Figure (cartoon, rainbow, N blue to C red):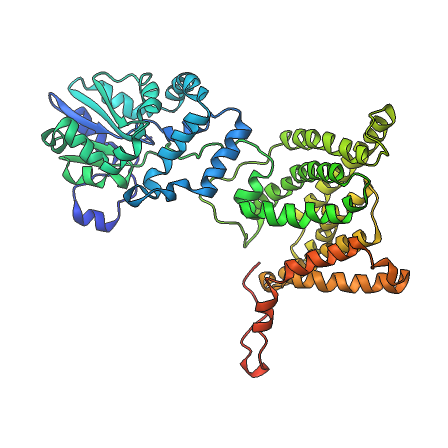
Length: 507
């Protein structure tokens, strides 16, 4: 259905008051065009209703590796390493496409098949028809996309008298730096550009719009930017992209879960290396299911809560997958449980008893994952203040529940209890409108650990805490708190100088 697009910004209107934004006016202009009228039409989200670069990157195979590759690039931002004018967003897509093509060279071989399908399903049908209906039009597709990506798509969009002007793959950053307007002036001549009809959806083409005789800045109703691999499922991707940040994988999962479990459980294993490796597989398995609670938590917040607290992200949040997380959890659990049981054997021989005990552990692990999922569902569907109680159960599932699979020492029990209680206390502060980020997590954990150590010494004797394991655990927690301690000391002041308030706007 034809409809007008919202007006362009005032500062651009002042530069060129004749820039049009109406689809209906554009079609009238194309229909009434006389002999040999040149049309410069943008490609991404104009002639094609999707972004060709993102669609190309979305075809990387294997998808799991492709997801990690693209997210690694977004985290490292190698385009910011380039010198001078090449630095920044102008080179972002070029580096992503170039590295993807080098590391996944088969993508260019299968791309023509995807391109044909993309042209059939995502071409701008009304615009294509309008460009075809008038034989007087000469169409020049001008894009900042890359020739090997755009050309196979354009080949299946039926427009006669079409020429493509795109960026080169290997020298794409130079072409982009030169700018679309300058490239077209060099290739077509200034006279053609000035007397043409320009159709684009992007304000990046403002130079073309300012000089063209018939400029049209139009956002098409069905055009949509979809970042590559957004819908692909990979364990921990939603956690790092939509709920926390990539650094959380290091601090929140490896440091505050896996390493805690290693200190608490693997320390007393006859084969600690094998045991620790098994725990790592099981942590990944656990997070495949725990992460489903994050998907659900954001969905419930967005659709039902009055004041949702969602991490800002320009990407569309994917829907929670139904089957893949359980498949990944199972695939990760098998080697994890096997290594855990193998580490408990007096020798490294594989036998039927080892398989039997592994199957039994697998049954226990499956129950733990199901219970964790049910508790998180309950957590997400009750009122916010009541969530503090199932949250404690969730924290138990993240650490102490692993003790059902293997032996644990008193020192290990103290560490896991201290970490669990600390996380719960911080959530209590947050949920009752406190400033959770101001709660010194590492200091609170060290204090809780010290208290539990004292209780252990009182009940079991001082020898219960005078072990190398306990010393390493205490030293680890002490080191983790050292970065927080200076700030804690500096903030101490007289009550007359105290301007801190426990109230918070966080919900």
